[in-house]
Image (cartoon, rainbow, N blue to C red):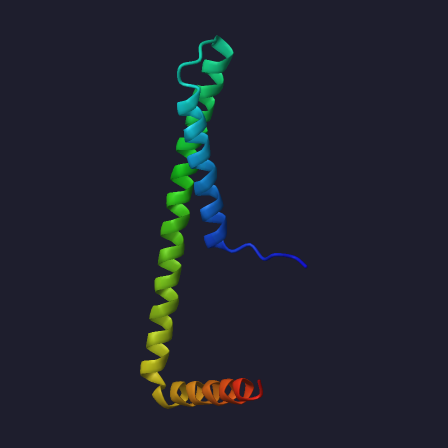
Length: 101
């Protein structure tokens, strides 16, 4: 069985990774060493880029969602009887399916 990855789940996972990496950076803040400092610098830059991408994805998802809602609202306003018929049909099918259980 394969699990479908949604944009929301991916964003949550990325945010978790960013939080964990930030916690790791804070935990190693007192550690000395040239290689460790170099790694910290690279990680901090990667985190800044990841946060920027996450924000961009969130904004794109919001815009996309708003466009879908707007399109649906426009369709319902232009075709109220079709929308009512579809809603009634879905309600009937759900009623039949739920009454069988």
